[in-house]
Length: 214
Image 1 (cartoon, rainbow, N blue to C red):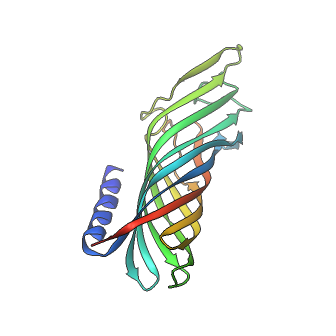
Image 2 (tube, rainbow, N blue to C red):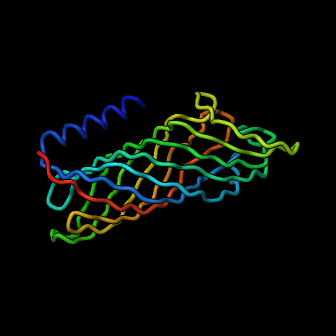
Image 3 (cartoon, one colour):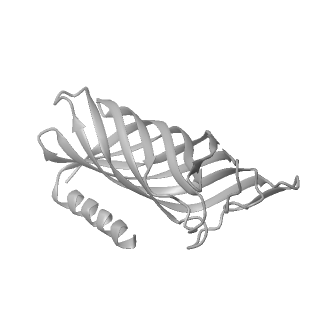
């Protein structure tokens, strides 16, 4: 996984060094949740609210297609109710409420629908998110409540997640707005007999280009 992150960073740096690019900053709110299964059975989940903030580049590639390497900080999480015992967070837990701080690396492609200053665009591609830290709060069957930090290890929650990202937006006069969807494709649980947990997120971003660099 470290090799994948390094390769993505090298591609982004190479593109920035050899092509004329536009750099932008962005941020906005998002609704997050997860697809959560225990032994193949789907568990009831609910949404949480967070935000993301970061920076992106727009590198000319071919015609109206651009390379758009992006890095950003994102607060994700989910609420889940269990209908059967789950190894994580605890076999006696009846629910779980998590908040996860992530740093995401996304080598996206952007396609502009027009060459005019004001135009719609789409972005799509894979992403790798690094789970920096997290907190979970759950109730046990003995009526006790546990509020603790999430443990990231080879037998607990995973430090690295994988996703597919899709954006649709509008850009004009150096500003842009876009809606995005995050679809987790890698479970953030590492335990062999534990649940399967995939990130889900919907958000809106507002951004501004800072200028052109060579």
